[in-house]
Length: 245
Ligand code: PGA
Image (cartoon, rainbow, N blue to C red; front, side, top):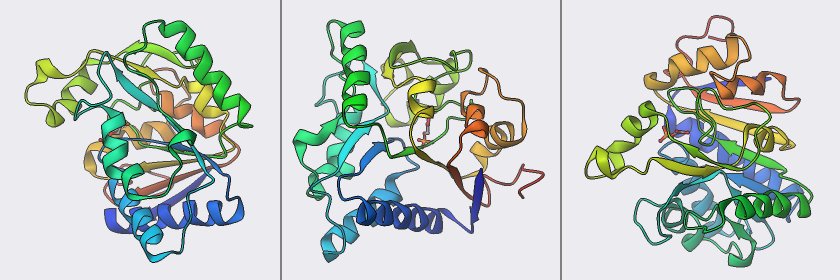
């Protein structure tokens, strides 16, 4: 486990984009796992700038997003499809054919989840997975109590997640109650993982993830066992760590 503590959000975003850039330069057909939420936005802006400067080419990469709300259309402004178009895809030369995001409108969810897993396998697996973390310690939408062996599945959002994400919606009642998410095991199988956390609101979850027991109550804690994981934190998110602070 590697832990990098940056001064602030800006530095965290730059550092992460730099690592992604190096990974793409090393392997132009990189399979990149992507996350949504507020945390990766700065990193996406850095990547867009690299593309605009001509120092980074996304044309051969494949992307898999972690999750999507259910049941929500891809055009809904709070859907993760929309978020990804706005924050990355429309601004770079990622080939639309190589973009995978869980389908929040899937009619046969079980079949969809199976196909999503298969699509990941067929690319040879995720080379680099970017993660945020919920204040309840979730990765993807793997809420407290989710099996650490889980694969892509439909899940109910925890009350705390609905509360956290209500800031993006007009009112709390508008937040979807469920989502399709990669499972904990799906995420764990990525060859390399970077987890990002910024701000005091994440400090408790980060301390439990890194220094607490490995438990389904904090699904991110499974990362303690991952052979190639980097936590990139800002000082506030790292503020409750004892060993790494
Ligand atoms: P955030 O969400 O980046 O908006 O804080 C992270 C998450 O819930 O995984």
